[in-house]
Image (cartoon, rainbow, N blue to C red; front, side, top):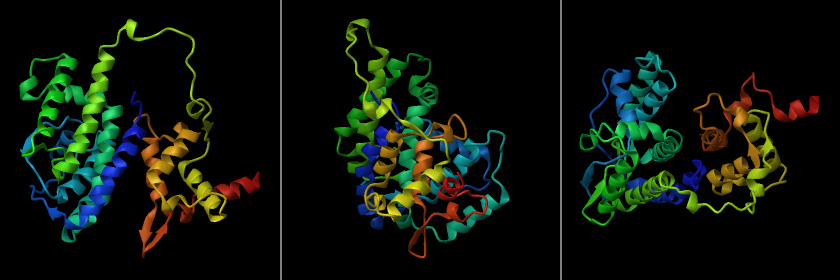
Length: 314
């Protein structure tokens, strides 16, 4: 059973690698530009991407196309998503978006595509109810409240596009992916929907009631982390610096962070109930590239309490 978004993090890694191999040939996807930068203008688009099942069919793509709207939808949408009373982006946010339009290049948007994929499957796992509610407003599902009927029809719709070489699902409105990549995302979506249908149809006879179930040590004995996510990152940077562990930056960083979250329970680091603490930890471990060198800005902040210094005090 798929119980959290780590499953998708592992599954989407090879897909993102394929995108990385083709991103240098990406072109600009022409979409309308935001003008007012209001909640109504941006957040509606954000919700249509990250809180809805994709269903629109488009002709087969053989290229990657990225619109400046992808960046603005993601940044603006996340800002509105975290502040329900916010009706318009702040002036400094708008200035930043307008400035970025001047130098926009789809070839530099790999991280944006990665964030789109991560954000979508994170929402799918933790906000599935919103997907169901929004699907009931689709013209062809009006008047239908049965979740299973909706899911079965979506699965049928998706599978029909997989078998047709001339069409594909428009997965992300602001980002166009080649069919060979887009279809892999659809397969993951189908897998999750089929699991949901199975859950809706589980019967007592499907379960053997024997006391022979063993809990994996991986999940049974997690270490509860009482520090911050930054301090956990600093701790492992120090371990790497002393060569006490292998250099995790040379491998799959996402899988490394997933492994950390299998070892440590970091739920106490969540800022709010809807936060994705695992993706947040991944963003911290990613750091920033400045002048070709990877840095971790949080280490230089005056208010940050370095974990090693705190340990020495105690």
